[in-house]
Amino acid sequence: MNESLKIFAGDLKNAFKDLFPIIVVVALFQGLIIQAVPDNLVSIVIGLTIVAIGLALFIRGLELGIFPIGEGLAIDFARKGSTFWLLIFAFTIGFSTTVAEPALIAIADKAAVISNGLIDAFWLRMTVALSVGFAIALGTLRILLGHPIAYYIISGYILVVIVTFFAPPEIIGLAYDSGGVTTSTVTVPLVAALGIGLASSIKGRNPAIDGFGLIAFASLTPMIFVQVYGIVVYNFMDAPAVTQSVIAAVTEGGKSVASTYVFSAYDTFMALVDTIKDVAPIIIVIFFFQYIIIKKPVAHLPKIVTGIIMVVLGLYAFIVGLEMGLFPIGETIALQLTAMGNNLLIYLFAFLIGFSTTMAEPALLAIAIKAEEITEGNLKQNVLRMVVALGVAVGISLGAYRLVSGDPIHYYIIAGYVMVIIFTYFAPKDIVPIAYDSGGVTTSTVTVPLVAALGLGLAENIEGRNPLIDGFGLIAFASLFPMLTVMGYGIFAEHKKNKLDHSKGETS
Image (cartoon, rainbow, N blue to C red; front, side):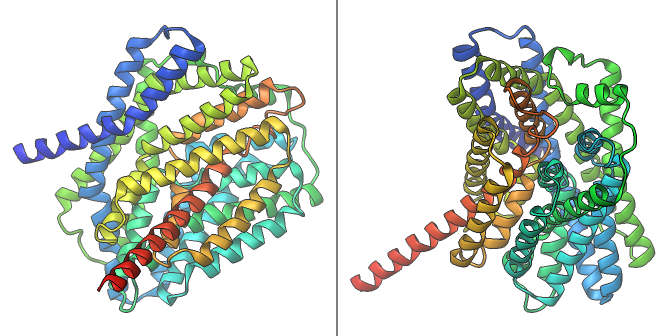
């Protein structure tokens, strides 16, 4: 018991350390730029404390429950030798965890208005969920076949670019953002554990090279599927009438008005219900395949169940704390900055909030822990997180510039993909899959709401911009640039190592 409390105390300390950059950024802008003390300061402090507790619980739950059962399932499937059931499991995990994703539901509702009713919210969600299910199954098949991930990802990016030139302008930003909102906080650790467990159990596979990459597939395929869906409905379907009440409801849902935050006891209870609903499909799929298909009891079941409960409670506390402490003040600052009309301050805020929120992302932390474990400490989790956070910061600030200037988004994204392809050629092979996955894990629980608020705030306050079209796209930038910074770090680290080895060789 004492040992468990000691471990949790360490996790809690690390959680507060992860939140510190966010606190500094918010305090800096609130005090020096806005020059006002927030009215709900006590609520903010309490909220951030709850966030830290939730983050600590979440990480401990991953270690106890999600990681072991994910890796255990992968090993059991590999021993069973049933490729069919393994691919069905991979597809089901991808589909079931995506179709109920809250961020996707919100974006699908907005898409109905963007397209004047051409895009149906339900069928858009089905399209994205099918694409993620297909992606996880395809990524799993790649691990089984032992193919280099770069061939798949580069081919996928080329396909995204080709489809973009045929897609209607109204759907492009939405499609790019769809790739960023599909990787939820609970899905990422399980999918990572599945890939690493599978690569570890197959002879001739390297967990560092072959185990990562499933999340990258889940971020890539929705961009293709949604654009193809947009092409179909814009060319072959008639728009139904969209009532003004629907438009008003969706538009209001997209606004980032801090004054609308009244976190009641009912909201607190519903947050728990929503968290359980998000986790339930994953648990149902896991136990169905474990007991019905593999027909083997879960090892250390009490420990696994305890871990799952800790994940649910941790994620619940995390969300409640964010709603109380971070989102209201963060969105207020974003709106006030856009209203001030100082573009440099907007870019600075975008950079700093991108960096600080990414450092606190639970999904990134989960991947970073696995990356350090698989590379035997050669890639430190804190280093990876900082490099990824730098990529998000650059991406969001560049995305904010794009929105302010009014440039078409696909020029930036296509240029970014070209750079990813070039960096892939020069980067060390063991860093490439981790870099690809880094793009998918950055847009999750913390980052997405604040980034979406910034994009909508800019689009609402800049003349000539449409919030429902121009407001999308920042999430795509936040997903793209971490791939470049992580591969760039890998290239630099390898060059430095080779230089050091060369100098040692000359000395000897």
